[in-house]
Amino acid sequence: MKKIVIAIDGYSACGKSSTAKAVAKSLDYLYLDSGAMYRAITLYFHQHYINLANPKAVENALADVHITFLHNPKIQENETYLNGMNVEDEIRKMYISEKVSETSALPQVRKALVEQQRKLGKKKGVVMDGRDIGTVVFPNAALKIFMIADFNVRVERRQRELLERNHLFNFDEVIENLKKRDFLDTTRKESPLRQAEDAYVIDTTHLTFAEQVDEILNLAIGKMIEEQSPKN
Ligand code: DC
Image (cartoon, rainbow, N blue to C red; front, side):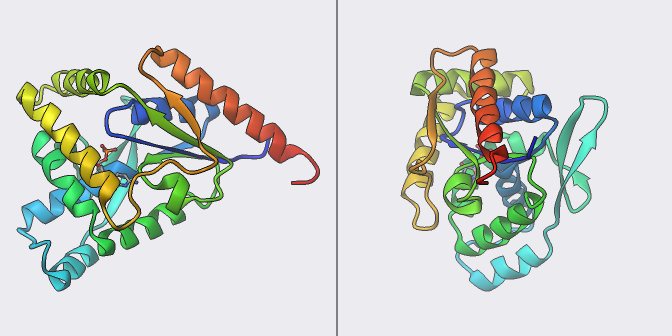
């Protein structure tokens, strides 16, 4: 079967990453977490006291940032590396979630990452999740998904994720963070989060994890069959 690009966009904590990971595993595709890239840059800017209001400082810092994904055979998953250091756990912490929307609103940051994301997705056979994958990064993706979920369900999911990682957080802080990121991610000037016209909307509020994965796999198989047809 012809390999396709699957773009999964949506609000924070709708289940995009875990679902995308499982879809990629089932199809033997590459999974790319674009949010992890924005988080890694945010960590670098934090560690190096970069002033986001200074475009030159941002540009110089971006030249020093190298993000890679390496497979960890123990957990059978890719992990995020920043300049050779494994930062997979650090970038999920609340202090990064607090700052990531400001960093990702910067045009220079988006330009650098979109370029890298397109390169990584060149080979097809890719599932990428984020906010602008179906609208900006891969506008020609064969399958575009826009995931949504009830706000309270999203809060619960994010709190569970942080508990599983043993990260310290305050319950109200998670609510405020999701609200703030929803606002910043949808209202920013540069490629805001929005549903692509040709995206399938999946509301995960009442779906089990297996159901949401299956729904995407069924759509993906349909798209692969379409791509296989002689007119493509
Ligand atoms: O998916 P996530 O919660 O790890 O993403 C973290 C932040 O990164 C999110 O609040 C907005 C930004 N982001 C983005 O602007 N564009 C993407 N394609 C992915 C994430």
